[in-house]
Image (cartoon, rainbow, N blue to C red; front, side, top):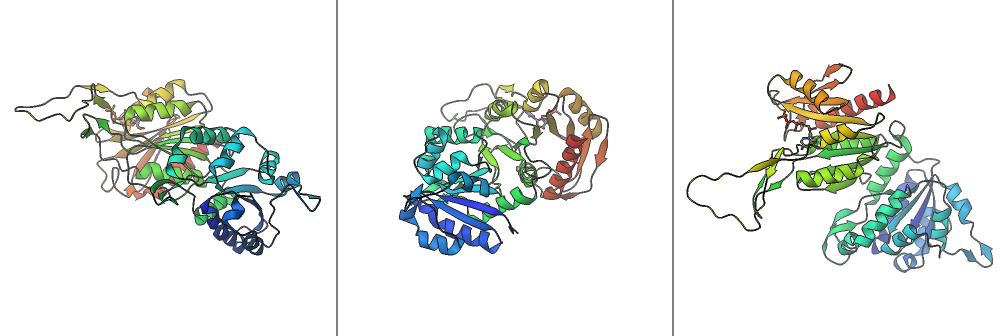
Length: 398
Ligand code: CTP
């Protein structure tokens, strides 16, 4: 699969360095040519001899050895891609600030090939504001960040911060090398799932959305090489790729803020979330005790994300909304297209069996602003995602 691909692997000091062995084996087995750079502290976790034996190349560590100079510029030009896995908190900070105190940093700073990193650290370190700020900084330098996994950590605690598995990194590389053509360089913002609107600390208003459609769309978009940010409400769904930037939110207001922060930089928006239309005016800080008689809650309208993006959208941005209707479906969807200034509406009808909320299948009709209308058969949500993404690609190219 990776025949003739030149992969430069940087390994930094983290217990997850052992996974680099498995990654090198996978890459070599698939035909890649692999060169390895390690930092001094990575060598405390993993033996250079193991790495050089597996990669079939000398392992590089120092800027110079035995009066020979390691040509870091040449390394970054030789590689088709530079993967830093695991990326420690320390090297992340150096990348954010341009420090150059070892061969790995010198190579990173002079690399002309794309750089992809797989962070690994404990959850508290990962969530520290300085780490998150450094991640945002290196993202702004056009580096790709593979998501961390949730699970058991070296500290014995469970949480976010586990390095992406070697298979996930290899999947990413497959996307990168072979499926990137159509949407390479496009930034896609997708909303998914329901939102929870708090009434008090234990109760909320929500709906039956599972998030499945939005997750399938995010994976399909990523498989075409797009850089995808998925903003999702509470859901049990998991992503099968680490190439997607997943942001979890709870309320409609959180989702709105998260989307608006990223609206200017996105090329395509797919608003598949079932955002609550109303939210309680006040949220009780204490659990509301039951009383005799009826109870009513005063609600106010949430901010409409699709509408807001439609209002500020530039000519070269493509906006897709969803409509779930029970009557006069086409007419309502056409109105939504105009009212929200969308480029396309994906219409689901609750009258179709096995389509819509919670199901693994969906039946859609796509309406676009030129008046074109295409109805599809009942299909798995993964297949539906393919239809929607193909449609968007045809419109972007048209
Ligand atoms: N949407 C949104 N923000 C909201 C509400 C909805 O972005 N606060 C988006 C959904 O993600 C979806 C589309 O708007 O893409 C659905 O439109 P909406 O007006 O919410 O449809 P309905 O709730 O069915 O509203 P109506 O009663 O007007 O038909």
